[in-house]
Length: 144
Image (cartoon, rainbow, N blue to C red; front, side, top):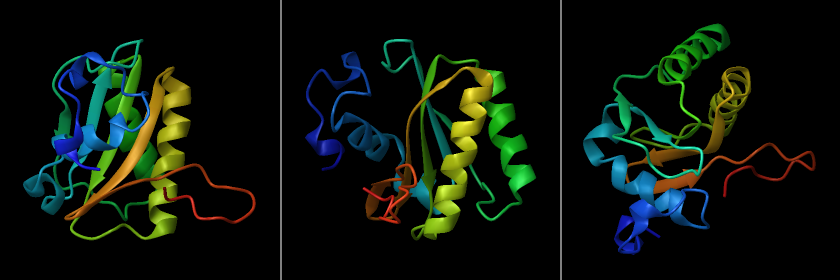
């Protein structure tokens, strides 16, 4: 699915509605943002509907240290103090699985610390949008 699949009233629906988040991420994360290694944070209200313009941070260093990643994500979430967020990583190519998982785990930890609901984390390469799901104990892939 792509942003072309969004229903007419998509902005009135919660992003937790089935299938909606990936299409919204595809709409928000344009080609320029993906090439610029952007981090997109879509701020949502308590009902998981979009609550303003997305926050886009260019030149994110995806391969930074764990400590720097926690500081980076934590400072963004603290500044926003949003009830819920949907987050996406823009990149020219897919992030390696272990790196995508590390970013997701950081987002989960920092959202828990700040009382923010994480609606999802997506990796947006030039031609794909892939949800990074929780690690499964069975060793199965965590990509959707």
